Image (cartoon, rainbow, N blue to C red; front, side, top):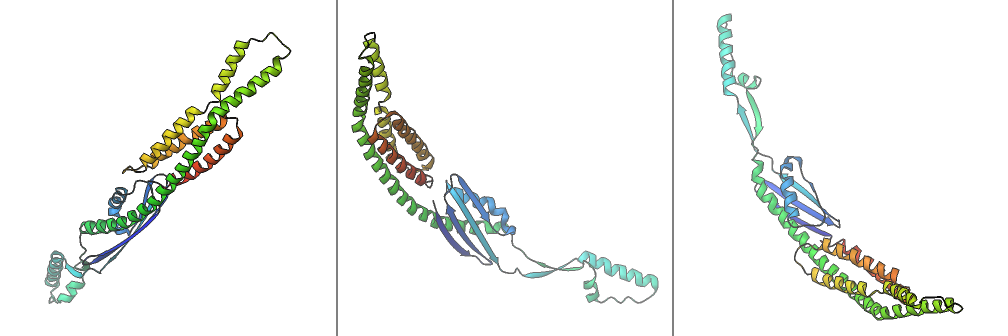
Length: 288
């Protein structure tokens, strides 16, 4: 299902903004885009999203704005002492007065270094995941709204298919009887000038062909599948895979009815059933 969520959060020295978009997908997939210095949190963000989303593709965009950390001067006191002692030793050996002002010591390599006091990244974990959860809540709310619309659409189509199946059930006995009559008519035409036909064998063959044309079992199974649809859509956990399976089973039964029943009106209703089932299949692909 599709959805969108956005949330922002500001701490003392950092601001987080999270934007999420979800689209239909057969499986669960989360793509996270965030600044490289925060990539250590990517797995935690992905797990947080997957704890709410079980089906679909979710794109997560995280932007971070940090205030410039305070600068500080780092002095290598040991190295400065060694420079001073080396200068004094050199002055003593060369017989010259030692002249090395402090500012010259500061300019010596590696004595002084300007740096930034960066906070521990781990301190950002809690606020970052909190803002991710806020965005997820908005996205999930939108997905639930769409899910309710999908539920009503799917159940409406199932009701239409139920009506068509009940009409098929009325035609089922007529199909067997019509098939039996056509077989007997052809046999009578064939044996009218012959007397060496085993009538009991013919009756047996007619019964076999009539049984093959019977669609009552398929109708019973379709009724069962439709009832399960109504039960599954109200289950609290993920139901998309279960509905996928039921759609496949319904498709198999409808195809069997079409292959068995050599009857114009039943064939027409089978075409309509297939069209409705295809629409249900498309919607089920969007259900978590």
